[in-house]
Length: 343
Length: 285
Image (tube, rainbow over all chains, first blue to last red; front, side, top):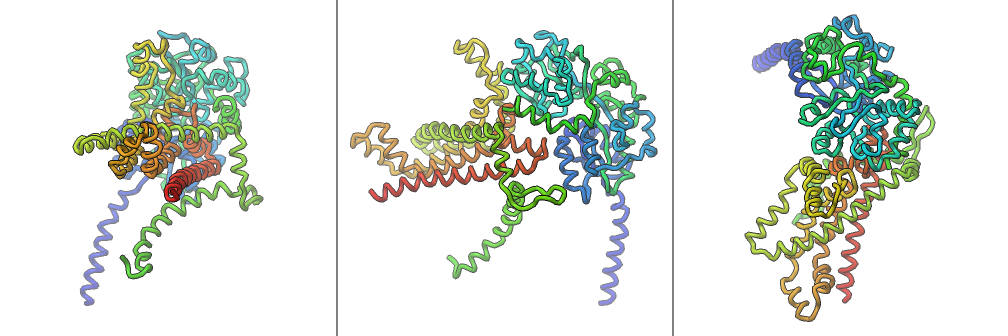
């Protein structure tokens, strides 16, 4: 009997020993990202990184509010190790104590980033990995767009989609419309009122930009304010769709990486971020029109650049809403919007 | 069937525990948020109805509530009217044809609601076949705006839930005595009287089941109003999603969830009342 027990014990030990290296390999990094272009990210970022680190990547997707709510709910024992969110959401997460400072000394590619991407909120809690312009995609055979206010012209309003205030494109588009109608205040009231006056004519207040391509294709809409990162599919419709350069300028946003406070895989998360920011990965993402590069060493052909938000000059010229303004006014925007547009 | 109640209860226990643990308790926790006074800096707590009064004091929420109720009722009534006609036609077929047609009625239920609803975007668009047909027939000059309206949601919901009404009515009509209609005709009833005084009372239970399924389905459907109505024509479900996913306002969302559950129960009770009231009249007669 004793021998039997001994043999069993030895066998178990043996199994344990055999499993240890396997367990080390099963180290996992959980990331939380936008749901867009996941096939390409898998091919360009996730799979190569898994090979490189010998670890497993768990990818959670969803819109930023959903994902932030999850992070907030799991604050005590974080599930997600790193996340990519908008600049304003990064500030919200930092204010809620969900994130840590990023150890940029460990990011070998940090020095290659455009200055504006290095610390977008000035708190050391985020690093920009891509930025985008927001302007108007429009049917150049049906209309002429020289100003953000042109969208609301009587002959055009019944052929446009406007981003809902709750989307990432909503506030920037209202911000620019406010400039165009000469009512440029942080509460966006002037612009919201202007949209409210045309609410019955406007085709829809979109929440998912993926829907717009279909609407443009079946000529339900002729124009919509969109982020540059959703531009590529419009160019493949076989319709004369152009990117407007309104006289008030373009707006946009920046997406940033954040690390979760209390994450047990900080090293791996940093390694992953560095990989994502590398010239090689950023170039590949740019070439597939997935993300405009934040790494200034990325060089792409003029043809590709035309489909991206490319170069430091472009990025500097974008009129972005400061994160603090966005956070402090967001609730008010939604309230004014619901009063003027939502019913 | 069982020696005593204890045995029967013991058998039901695992299912009951499962349902309580994974459904009832989480739902109650979620719903209780709507009745709690939020604790801010150590002040507050306890129970309150303020979330409900806040909810109904907003004119947007009132509009959305009434729209949801109205669309649910219209979809239910229209599906009952179309459902009776279809069910009559189907039960009068020979058994083979009946099986085939019933299969066709059920078929849409097996297709993803997302695919079905997206098809409507193509069909109802300004360049879609509905508008093309209207213009070709000279009914309209310019294309109608159907998408992102209550009409679009109505069409989507009707298509989604009509099969449930038809199936309920088919089984009700099949259980009706075969000679009831000829007998009523012989005794001089016109077709309206036949339907109102004979068919309706005899199939009322099928109508109640179908009506409850259609009404509660219309109240709680999310994909159809989200795709065909969008944020321009909010319904309670899409408003609830917006409160959770966009505004992170879980209290308002639990208030909406509670309202939806109450509306579903109320519809069921109301429809059952209608049915039993009629039965009592018949029993008394």
